[in-house]
Length: 460
Image 1: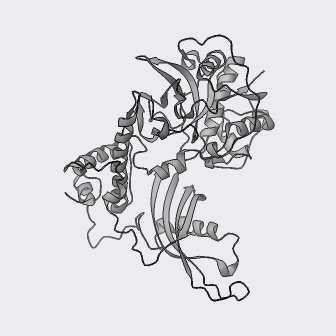
Image 2: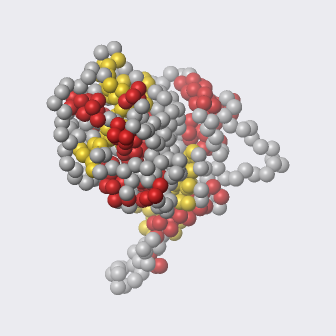
Image 3: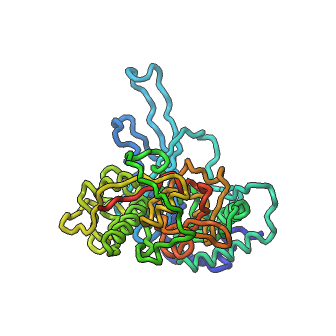
């Protein structure tokens, strides 16, 4: 079986080796030397964040680093592995005996948006300096199969061909052979994982290649999901009065003019803002008869309780809208996908809300409320969504726990496909994901916690 770099080269995914006389290319995303222009600024920023607040004699120094980068739009996400060295303790007022230096292995996630850096993750722990590093990692180390079935002999060749199609379809570019080889190994591992998810799904969903297929699970969660949803209860709100009538057999607010086009949150964990603006857009349409595309960027910049691209809660967002005095439109306050200085203008606000309410956890009552009152902000466990293509998703409950919700979305309708009940869910990952930007989830079983955090704005 040919090694991955050779397969990539044969399939045209990598450039041929440059002649000896050509100028050396900038160090790739997997370079270990700090001198790499690709790594210098994100590494410097990560080290600065680590040492912030430390006294001069206790700051760590960088020993070695390597990294990988993924680009989307105007942003770059750097995944760094760094070896840091703490200085020895020789101060008799602090330690009774001299202590040798301590080596740490750290993983950092640094987001670079137009030259501005943000530390998304920092995990550090002591490392055995005698252990071997992972510069010689092979494809098998990135392929955690759920069973011991052997892979077919032509697996790598077939996977390389599929990966080539993926690179073409989603216009991927990689900076080096090492980066492309690494991304292909991640892609192959993800395809095996998607097959396992497919085999265990009880619905009609199809899982496979998506625009997120070259991301590790950790990268995907760090950039596109919202960990605050499962960690914080948010503000308490009054419970909406449930309807007394049974819901219609099906309903879809997209057909009734209450839903704007699918949007794209980009490399920013701002799903909470998109979920809330989608709800408010629908509420305003039902109360005032006008559908306006509202500004998520206003919430990222001006909601000081939530964490912008690092996550937030719909309950906090409703309060922010009330306190600010309303929402501007997307045209007046356009989306940038990163935290900026708040520039909200009350004079430009086109929409306001009076209150917000929690909704019933009973899905029958949720359907009745939706049909009568408009799209609903909900939060779900995003298990499997990295590889979702189409159909009705119905993961096993242990795999998609309702207590591990990490993504906010918008319920816009419900119905049945071939006797399988579903919720129609507007997502915020663009129209090149899912069913033209929509996700369909099993209805009536509390799948993935869809009924746990349902809410809506109130407009009088």
